[in-house]
Amino acid sequence: MSSTALNQRGVASFRTKLLAAIMLVVSALAALGLYFTERKVMGDAERDLRLDFQAELSSLHKVQELRHAALAERCSALVSKPRIHAALEDNALDLLYPSAKDELRDLMEEEEPASKQAASSLHARFYRFLDGAGGVLSPPHPKDVGVLSARAEAQLVLTKLPETQQIGYLSEQADPAGETVDEVMAVPIFSTETGNVISALVVGFKAFELAGKRADAEMRSGIWVNRRLHLPSLPPSTQAALSSEIANAVARFDRPQSNFTVTVNGALHLLFYKRLNPDSLFSPAYEICLYPLASSIARQHRLRWQVGGAGALLLLVGFVASHIVAARFAVPVEQLAVDSEKNRAQRKRAEAALASTSEELKRSARYSADASHQLKSPVTVLRAGLETLLAREDFTPEVYDELSALLHQTYRLTGVIDDLLLLSRMDAGHLQIGCEPVNLSHLVEEWLDDLGALPDSLAVKIEKEFPAELYVAGEKRYTSLIVQNLLENARKYNRPGGRIRVVARKENNWVVLTIGNTGRSIAPRAQEHIFERFSAGANVSGHGLGLNLALELARLHQGHLRLLRSGEDWTEFEARLPAAPPGSDGVVKSA
Image (cartoon, rainbow, N blue to C red; front, side, top):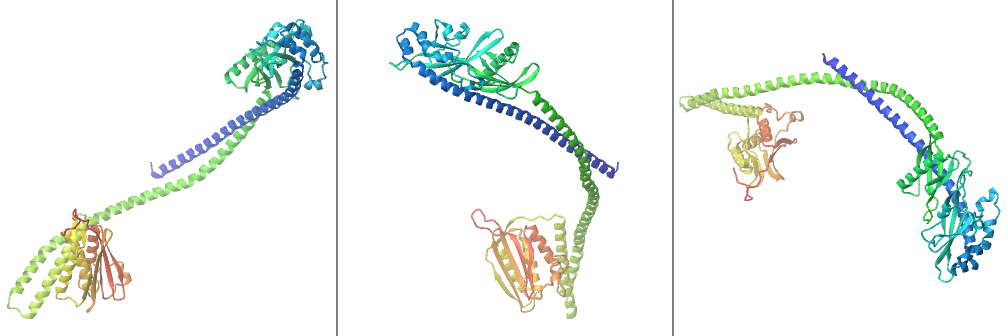
């Protein structure tokens, strides 16, 4: 299969994967939107019902507080009557109820108020006195104080006499039709002599019912006391089942108020409960509110269908948009694949060209080395012959001059061969140098002395500025070649009566050597090529390898060589070589 076909298959696979990824993201967003919307609807519905429940309870508590305050004030005034206190403190309990009958007649015989005045009603259905242990003192004539069954009267018994007003709820089977719940208030009676609680008056009155106070007829309210639910609007069997669930919830949550869902007659309801008499000595009683969730569930289903339809529409739009986006995104990918194929082909051609160039360089390096080796032997033979001829004494002076010139050229040719051989070894990577301290100052001094001894040396002034001991890290032979080539160039390209200035110094971990000379400056265009091989200047003896050899040797020492400036009768080069580290005794020893 061709590369183009493979690229087309790759682009198609990318487009398919991109389309699937976008659709997955859109589907996930739609599902999350549906989930969180449904939760919000249920949360809002539950919060609204809870607020309604709290509002209804708040209204109930305000009414109860008014009733309790008025009843407590009235009962406190009644129990402070001298006749009741006398009967209790003198332990004349047989006179207690007869004495209280006249005192509490108004409380018991007050006419039933109209429904609009029920909130402020103080009409009592019964009352009882408690003895010192919290037990009920039975009245001689129950009809005068309100008839109670033995079961109901047992619910009035307290474990101890209260020291503050106590609220409780009493359930009683009033008739075969159902059970009633009365609200009771226990008011402590204090001794006028000791100030201790000696009895309590327990007054019962009809409980204020939440039902009927709300316009929403679907809500049902009742009271749960003594593990029994009083909610007349529900059948007895349903009340018994809910009583069990409420008891489990109260025991499980262990909180004064909470809510949970229940099923009533096959329909889901939300049930709220709240303690009506916290911190009371009477049995705990809870206000119960039952809300049907049918409307909320129906609204939830409608919203679910709406969100589902919107999600389906969003998926459809997402599919179309994803297809368009995937197609547009695939265009640069396809172009990238085409460019990649072109780049791959170009890279292969470049690698082939690089391999060919590398092979040519290797052949060139081998040729230079072989040629250098082959040339050294005939040049040596030629030099020996010329020296033999110069030893004879039968030639004219002109012949001796020609022979001397030819001998000098053999030495130049030997230098060229040696330089070429050294460069070829460096090109092939076969030249490795040692690393030892080399006294650069001594090398410079030696080559300056040699320059002055040359027969064709110009009359130039030598200026030098460097310490006597300046060490570089490298190999003495090749460091000497760098100095030699720079100084010879400064001599060759100088003018009569000119000067050569040599400065060396240490900068951090480097030794910087600068060599400048007077003479004709290097043209700006030629400055870019001065370090190339065979770039000797015109009318100057040399073969054009010196600067290139010096540069390569400087790089081999991990250093560098550059032209600082050339112009206005001055040319200056700079060589940077790594400084030699001091020895163990702190002194660098010369090589």
